[in-house]
Length: 245
Image 1 (spheres, rainbow, N blue to C red):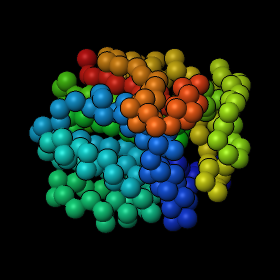
Image 2: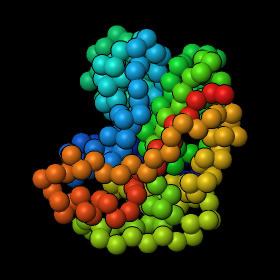
Image 3: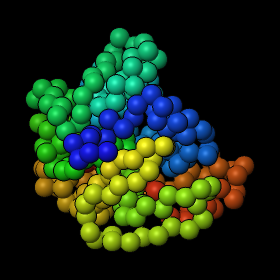
Image 4: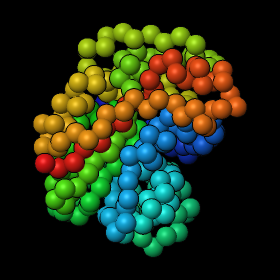
């Protein structure tokens, strides 16, 4: 993978299929038992809200947003394979999808009441420019909610076969590029500490509402006590919610 490859570029048809099989694998997926419950808990009432979702993937989140009463949903993703799936599966007239990188997307000023991004910002070399664009896009009092792979995980590549039972944290305070294998291809993540994520949000002009490390939802793993215990060992996801000052 060359240095100019963006996060969404990694998701060709083959990688997309592998990733989505994992993403939608029920309680075996940390997205399902850790990230998604936290997002839903902090999403709130979306009645008549305009939502922009950066890194929308296959569009599954669009249905959640529309079901909660959103006036409109715009999903943005750099993967042509993902956007194609999203346009095929989401039929609501209130939902649209845009093919393009998060870094290059420039929404109209005041065009959103909520901007979300789920598990995408760790693909950004620089997060500050995107946060500034989000601030510009939001209406007065608008909100931002995003999740990323937890910095404990991005600090070091713990890639291995089978379910992990140990995790290594290394070079935690050395922010920057991390390359790793990801569903059969090489991707580049950009590691930042928790402090750096929060500092970037504050510097962009937001007030923090919530910081969550997305503890696994025991209700979803009630029939899998061993998996619940394993998922409680280390945080895998960081969620940050904020609003305009």
